[in-house]
Image 1 (cartoon, rainbow over the protein chains, first blue to last red):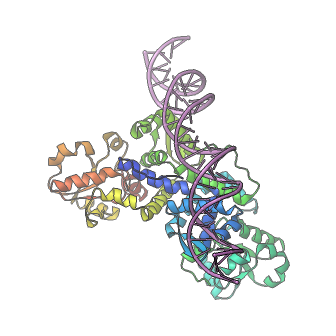
Image 2: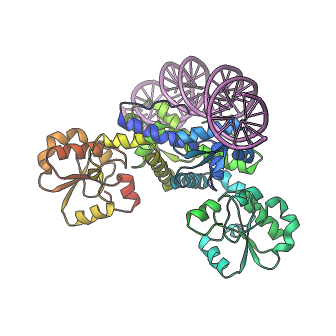
Image 3: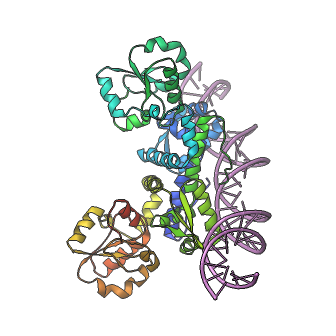
Length: 222
Length: 222
DNA sequence: AGTTCATTCAATAGAATTATTGAATGTATT
DNA sequence: AATACATTCAATAATTCTATTGAATGAACT
């Protein structure tokens, strides 16, 4: 990622270089995971390191690489350095790359198919539909992310039922249709939650997209 | 780019790996240049090699790398192998990455500023506006790409004035406003053409985007 | 069959990326 | 000032990526 000075005389080359720097910064699974976390809100280096299970120094370097590419920005807050996505365009780029992968890679399909047998069942609830049904009080929205992430911001009206606790809290969820969400479109926790709930006879669906998409759509958070 | 088997047991990791493969394939200036050419239509390996000025074997390898990532597809046609973008989503991803680079990188800005002093002058003509004015016959549209690229497909009604020939063909262009386009949003040939035309006193503007964008918008080609 | 040409393959060296380690820096707290 | 803690820096080895070369393959043409 070292690119001390991009200074080809050929301006066309220089442009492609700049674009490549951005794509290169996205071209690493660890960094993509970091972006997915940052999409939910600003985070400090060690919170991120804990979440993704990497050494702090390693995460710090990845974050700096992304900062050089313009994907993230950082500000010091006391002892901590909070990183955040620099722009909504970063999420768009992530989504666009995901779209390419979805169309091509049979592997991506198959990962998702692992949780669902029939295609119909995968159909998620749209944000607009969910917003409407929440207003009518017809639906229980569960946030299946870990409690610490929930605490840092969540969909207005959602209750936190971390995936690990789902088993023991089924009685809370009786009676209404359930919509589960988590970090983003391919966050597997919501897939697992829906699969488990259906096995117990609940009527459960996934929200289309995760928290970042909800927030970007201007829908209420708390 | 070698990734013989992506088979982490962790499905989350596997997904990020897949997404990273796509981004990585976009993370190289040469490959981005190839994509820009392929965005105009299917091309054979050696046509591409001539355009980008790289050894054929090298181009072939880049194309294969992109094929593995799902960015391009290929079909044999007699002696030739024609590569093409596999999907419109590839162009979206390219555009999204470009958008990130534009917002962040002062360098990208400065490359463009090299051709124009004032920001107002950079404002391009939208596709819709141009389509309307062409219908009224008010405007001369010039395609400043090399003749061979023009021959493989161009905007309906455009005339081909390769940048290299612009000097000698000014009298053809007298009388009407000129709109220039070339390969894509950052293709510098149209910037140069407009700058040169203005120096000679012509009223000239750039088309917003290039040929691929026009085609994607469903506007007429020939 | 032999020739020509486009493409791919295989092997290589050089460059860049990544994870890891431990030391250094900077900021709050006592 | 001394400590604790979060982050960054610097150096390293392992891996991966890239360009280059020349040989091999595949399809058309004589």
